[in-house]
Length: 550
Image 1 (cartoon, rainbow, N blue to C red):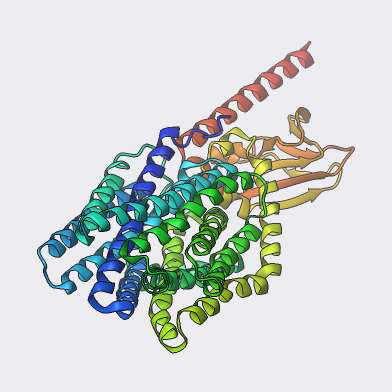
Image 2 (tube, rainbow, N blue to C red):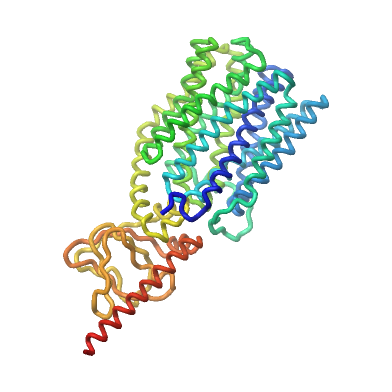
């Protein structure tokens, strides 16, 4: 089977990734331009207040907006975000050029940030629909991490050039153009969208579903908690980048872009290394390493506040960010139900955005009370300490995902299941039950109501029709699909063979039918299997009857 499956053309993933790269380059450059503008207006306090205000607004509004992303095709959400953000940033460029009130620019910045906050949840929920295996999803997130790092390097570097030759207005205009490109490139993206509920979106319960999903799953809660620590540090870094560049190192406005670009440069190296994680597992532990690397270098900058060490240490922050992107976002997509995936990611992003806001608001106060260098050291120690406290839980999460990987490997060779996108097959793996039958035991009888679809894990299953064994099924083969897909009683009796125990994995009727009938390729493969088995059984019965008559 092609590694990209039948769910989406290979070009769909490339277009989705191009959109992400353009959007993140826009965001990375915009953060630098806005920070410089705020610093000119009111110093470090203004930078912290602007960062906190736009992040808090995004955190409050994005979970409500994400209910839409779980109801409609997600590429439409991405396209809408691109257009809205382009309009807001274009307006900010005009207002800044005209010398309008700073409040207008900051208000438009908040609108752009709210739109941006919806982009990543929708994109994170779209990728599993385009991928057909956990390895492909991990690879796609590694590519996205590379794009994130490249954007974190290229966006601030471009902002530094524009700030040097023009000013913040030019940065905002360039960001508007990149956002528009990000929206336009995904219009009409071809892939098999999963079936959606028909109920109208909205309501407090539905808006909070993402948070409830995170709270209910220990793995999601653990990743989110570590993510909050990481983004709190990121919010601190947004302020520190300005203070360190202008006050501590004396490199001026352009130095802010250079320091931020150093994070992107390290991220590119980290992303190259992250490709080696594909198929190796232990993503939760690598996530922990990434979170620790995001914080510890800040303590190093506080101890060695020189330009060269600072650039190298910020490169380590970028490496940590790359590991977080691959480990964190892959695990989140695999652990949550596809039906609430966008809302879960929006809840996750909202909590992380609050972390950025809190870090941005707290840092000026800490700097004012203790000074820049002690504040850097104290902030840098938070993430490593949090990871140390969570290390055992991260190991357990890796073990849990390893069991699920084995279940997915058992399902993927079956063509009707192998055609499913990774988000759906993950749901099936989570719903999979295991059962054992002693030698000769009956699994079900002809005429019974069909409740399960079965996969043989070990042993042999004998299909009996008319008192005769018409087919013997071994490891990796399936049975039980006829009654489910044709909505009829069991067409044959199935027993464990007399010489060995039969171990099976099974899916309940509702989970199996929702997955297989919801995607054209899977439905066609299932129908083909049913037809071929019914024809073969009919031929065997006819031959057996003819032999008996002779």
